[in-house]
Length: 248
Image 1: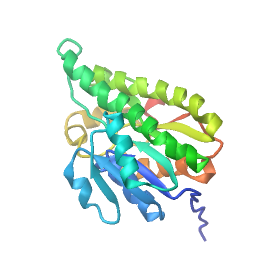
Image 2: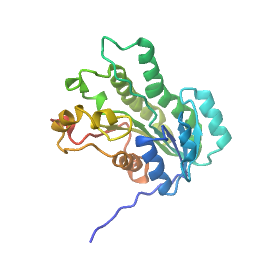
Image 3: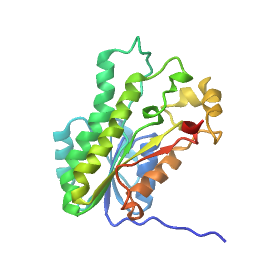
C-alpha cells in the first residue's frame, strides 16, 4: 500500500516565465494540473498553444510592459511566480563578448527581478505568496572542470540570481511572501541536448551519485512543493537538484 501527500495551494493563479519549453513548460503543466490558473510568458510564440493555459508572448526584461500585461489579464488572486526564463550561450572566458554577457544577465537575472517586482502588487493584495527562481548548479560548481567551453556569463547570472533570491526574501517577508530558488544540475531538455547527447555526458555522470540526467518534471515537482502551502515556512533557501554532483 502506498500513501500520498497531495500538494495544496491556497492561491488561485500562477505566473511562469520561460513557459514554452523545458523546465518552464513542465512547471506550467504541473501547476495547471493542480487546478491553478496559469499565465505562461515566453518569447517563443508556441507558448500560446499550450492547452488550458494563458500563454503570452512577452519581453520579461521590460518591467513596465509586464506590469501592464498583468493589469490587462487581471489575475485575481495571483499568488505564485516562477522565474524560469533563461538563455545559455557557451563561450570561453577569453572569447565571451561583453554584449552577450550583458544580454545573459538581462534575461537570467534582471528579468527575474523585473517580473517579480511587476507581480508584487498582486502578491501583496492576495495577502501571501511564493516566488521560485530557477538558478543552476553552475552557481555553485563550475562545469569548466569538465568542459573547456565554459559559460562564465551564465554561471555569473545564476549566482547573482541566487543572491537576489535572498534579498527578495528579506524584502517580501513582511508581506508573507516567500522567495526560494531551485538549482538544477544536468537536466535533459532541448537547451542541453548538446550535452546529454554528446561527449560531456559521461564526464557529468561520473560526478553524480545518481547516474542519469534529471527530467524537467522532476525539477517542476520541487518547484511546485516550494509554491505550495506545505512550504510556507521555507524562504531564502536554494534547493540543489543535481543527483549529488556537488558532493563528489
